[in-house]
Length: 306
Image (cartoon, rainbow, N blue to C red; front, side):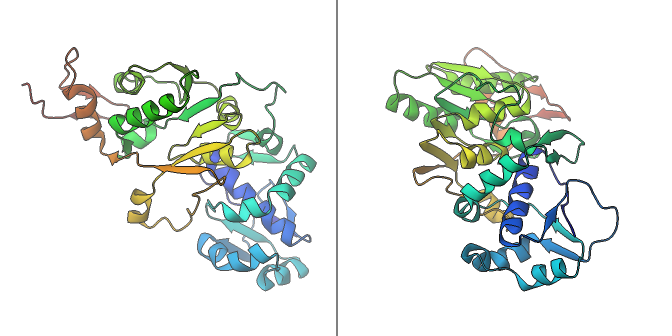
């Protein structure tokens, strides 16, 4: 009986869909998880809302009657959602890791067609632990800036200053997609001022393992960093952003808050792209721009000096 997770999003989203699938397989051993779309309509669809409704039974290890019945009658089940939670995966952490080790070649395919494998969640494909940075901060700029979900550079600079005071002998590693726009480079300059930092921009799996191998990890609004914190065996301190923005738009599938007991919440002060440009350029004494070219459009803000 095929059990398939619909592919929605980039790698971090696919990782969470895979984790939810594995939990259901752990509780319902008769399920056969496949990475190939069966190509026909499912008999049963499990959505984010249903998964949340099932959560008390899943946490207790109790099979879900509707899933057990579908499995017993050899029906096709489709998992269709994002399933970004923490406690359910922490409860089954050891079983999830065992499942991954037994199925390392299971394909994780993004909606863009990028192919990764389950084993990459626990080990870099080269077998080498990348870099070994102890303090790692994940940044997400490009796509979120385009939809006006920007962390205030002032807020991130304050956060990094506080962490640097706690760990004065350690360099802070900033991990992000390779910057290509002027505002991205300016953002990095701004949040790095007065700090000892280095920057990593690699393929997604290498960046994931840099995050996963950290001891102190500052997560962004990014499922890639969340899964890295969840499956890390080295992290001892995690910083998670507040979720005021997500609460305001009703993202019921996101309850991920505390990957380890020592999780510290921080406020990234979500602002618009326009306000971020004002923070980056408007207060600068040596750089003055009125028009910033972005990946999708030209964003113009009113410069107070013009």
